[in-house]
Amino acid sequence: MIPQVASEELSDYIDVFCDRGFFTVEDTERILTAGMKFGLKPKIHANELDYSGGIQTGVKYNALSVDHLEFTGDEEIECLLASEPCQPSCPVQPFSWA
Image (cartoon, rainbow, N blue to C red; front, side):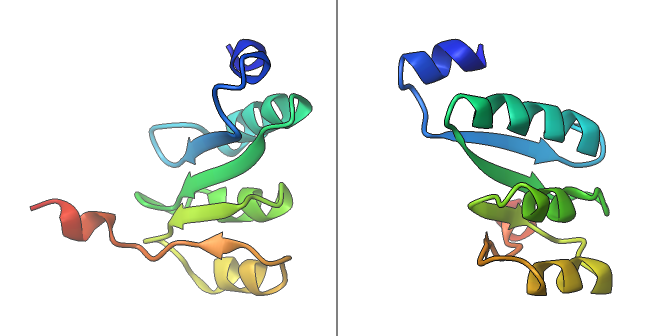
């Protein structure tokens, strides 16, 4: 699917939900690598449900954004601080579940 999406210019980004019950770090790395091979820019949704390693993966792959971040500890904060500029989003999703 990724090669066709890229060849038809249907997306500029490869976006992965790296979290418990969804994609693992290993899955996320494979998906990001495949998308980046076709010029898609990485974005990550991570750590909304648990400490998933998604923040670190987003930093490793220089993601344009790392979103959700409800589970962010000292290790994740240190990783973000040591990274190139990255646009983490504020954790607001749970507040919209009325």
